[in-house]
Length: 357
Ligand SMILES: C[S@@+](CC[C@H](N)C(=O)[O-])C[C@H]1O[C@@H](n2cnc3c(N)ncnc32)[C@H](O)[C@@H]1O
Image 1 (cartoon, rainbow, N blue to C red):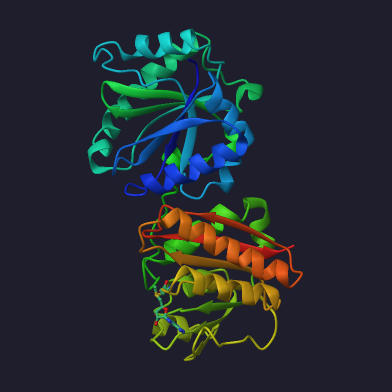
Image 2 (cartoon, rainbow, N blue to C red):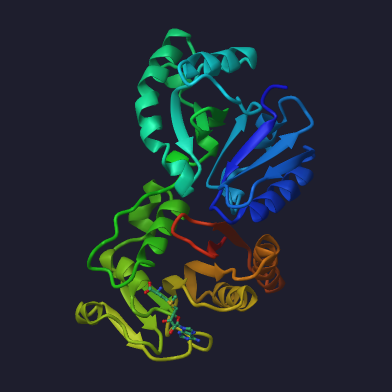
């Protein structure tokens, strides 16, 4: 059987969207299988027909291109009802039986549900004994050339666990695929964390100083009360904040914010800006059309956009919105690179990054 279970972690409630996405992408990659989902579980399993199909599929796809996946790993079938007194042996047995290579790290995780999170104390206690046993069995090493593979133990409860492997160059660097950020007290709304997470997700660390540089010009569409504007101001940028609603006074007092009480759908910047960000609640098609207009006209160099997804068929809605941006831009001879992720701080929405290339 080997590693034929592709385990994908997602936001609880988005399992059918995750399932639709992986089925479509696996079919394009020619790796066939079926999907197992449980509503509100926070994960999906895609079981491939080929023996090592999950690992092969991960090699064919880019993790960054998956919208609804927070993390993934190529796992073996679930280890069921393992002994509560000797979990290590059950895990080692599976690693040997399925010929797992020596890994550079091991992480113990659970789904992002209240029920599963109760296991986090157990995971913390279990990780060190497991590490020691893995080292003794030559399944864990600190040698740099082994650092590219990471072992995942995904506990559904204290006796049922998926054991899988990821390539650290093609997966999320964060435990459970979740980037935990501290809410900055001075920011006027919690949505500030969505933009901060988007910067971490879409802009590589090495590029942040140049692509999010002090003095850059930006536009925030649908800015009030100013959570996203706060992120831009905090990076010493100048911001045109477009919204009929009131902005936080402290932000206006910085003299970095020019508040325009205008309609974001008709607003045009006086000159090209470095960044346009937008968090307006509207239909995905309308937001997509607005994003395309900014990219086609070269009004901004880069953009980060939220697509709100109150509908049932969310994967389809995301696909059509992204296709729409690409089609409009291609129709005008503008090539764009789009990336889209459901971030940890996103709720019924996904975040898109766009740049013309
Ligand atoms: C979700 S809130 C934005 C929150 C903001 N990103 C923050 O972090 O504080 C959406 C905002 O879009 C604004 N909005 C909706 N339609 C708009 C339009 N056509 N033009 C300008 N602003 C609009 C609303 O007034 C509202 O303040």
